[in-house]
Length: 461
Image 1 (tube, rainbow, N blue to C red):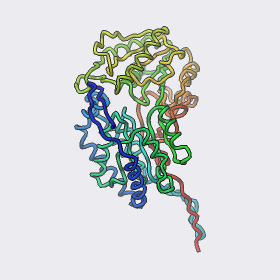
Image 2: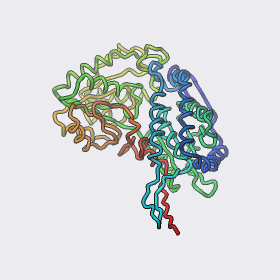
Image 3: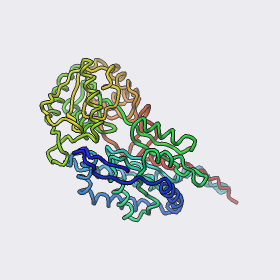
């Protein structure tokens, strides 16, 4: 049984039976059988159907927002994820013709030579709970538009999300064998990635967003199948504030990037480096912002910080914070301001006096706590930002774009931001390095992840 325990009150909010092995096998073989006809459907028709599905999803947003609060704890005041879903799907629809256009090598009296981008076949999307709609649509939309059939397996914390997306797309006219939501446990997912029911590989591409351990499990499951993998496995994203930065803007954005969604953001800010002359002012302003947060029931419109998705996630952050304090870090947020801290409800915290000997500054915590360090030089900041097993994004605060680009060239990361953070631009490739994983999503390159090149060498006459 797939069971969602609500972080609001610990109750069972939703549960669904896990598919049987035979039913799961039937689902993917039907997806494989239906895929070619979908691929032969005109591109514009596929685009229209996907966008209609997105429109249908948006029409249910008033129901989705409180549903998300019950499933994973995000306060209703933030209005859900439809804005991001629509932005990403619309952009991918806009660039589909360009991204999928054949590469013409020669079209003469003697030869027509070209390279087409063709769908891989069956794409499995394994989506996380923290931004359950946006992370799913990153791959679902381009995979369908490119002519693949798609199987969506959502996190057990957000089981209703996959059902919502599937219903919206089916009502738009996308067949159930072309897009299917499934309830699989870990063992069944592994078995289906490995499955060859027709003496042929069925799942051709797996896109997984989650933990490093989960990504390793995906690689092990796919070993020997030759299925391609897209893996986004989290981060320990840094911010660096330079002396010419707009200090107020830097504090507002970086602290929001660290605390929004209770810190449960793949590209959230988990460590901040501030040039020494601005350090004290930065910390004072950051503390003032965090002291204004309201931790509470996410169904309350006044709440700005809801519970973490599970009590064990909050306990991990509590332990990491306690260890840092025991090792000499200083906490700046008084627990008395957040008397309802406990269980899944975790008070925010700002720590100084931190070092890279502490897990807080090197190990992902995925919670509303951030360490802030002063730095003397640009070189020191670059070394510290690179001192991490992860590489998803880095946020640079300066008025000099040339300087930001030069520093960015020295960072082991997937995206370099200047004067912003914690944002995913659908026109840019979403990617990472090191333990953050591999592959690419969104942008024109996002279509490359869900297609393969196919060469045509046509001799005339």
